[in-house]
Length: 464
Image 1: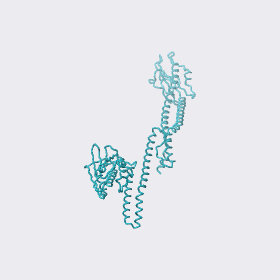
Image 2 (image 1 turned 135 degrees about the horizontal axis):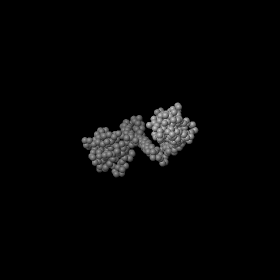
Image 3 (image 1 turned 45 degrees about the horizontal axis):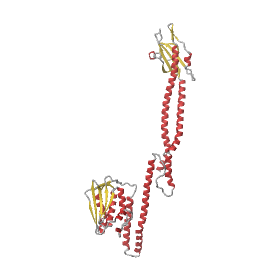
Image 4 (image 1 turned 120 degrees about the horizontal axis):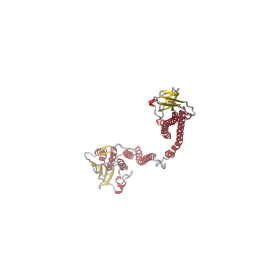
């Protein structure tokens, strides 16, 4: 239920990519809009101030002194420069010192000392309930003690209208840019995600086959970002194939090898029903063989288990060897075999105790089972800084030929020395598989007589 809810609330990858691409685009568009609006306002102000300043200079040039008096001839062209479609109001004021000479006497008068000489100065002001822009300058005329202050002002309707038009064009351009980007991004995303769709189709195609196909995916060339995903999926398929092959192999081995003891059990049960006194002993023997076979099959399956990573720990090889001898001591006594252990005070490796125990248990079982009566088995534990730690199992039985040693480790392999024994032929197969999982090496030597098997744990060997 939780998985279904997660699937319902998870956004599609295309939507996520589209959102992550458009979000920065919108942020950039907003920032550009703010910067553009600021630039537009500055450009409009500078352009209109240039016109207003030119009209101011044209008016100021007409201010002259005649017979000791300041005269003025307002040029029509100066006011014509300020005409616009919004019909802004124009105001002016000419003053000699603090005294207004002509124009709008109530127009905001500046501090004379603050007005630059022969150079326009601009400022905003409020006049007649309207915002206005004032351009003003100071002139020094010969024969006149007080400076002449020339002021020219206009309302801001034209400036505001021009600014609005330019900003509207800017916003329209940005909207068109975003629209075109969205129209182009969607097919671009579809093209970019096509390899992912091909990979999904290659995986989905496996569901249409009656027999599970665990071979590597055939999805064609993939982008570098998708290759790790495909490789990981191929590795998962390989591990799954190995696991299912192990299950099939285990099932086949179990069904094949259990058929004989089960048939014996059925025959002996039938004999027991007829009153045969020896049948019960045969039933017990067959049950023991069946139990041993099942134990060996399970041990082999555990040794070959893929994907399982045993926990590494410090293992005392001498302690493990003593525990194995303690388990097999009754078997050794019953077979008339002497078992000896030679171990230093401490020989440790960082590995997996259960698998080491399984290896030694099978090696000792073989050494007892295929030895002669009255024989000896020697278990030797060694440790040094050069060769690493090792444990060897040596018997003085009949041994194996070179051809038989080459086949040692095959499942259910039976040799001439196994005649009359009740082995399953799985012991050394378990040993090889477990040693491989531990990263340890196996070495077989014809001891003449007998066989010596050495398990070596080298420094830096992989323990998994």
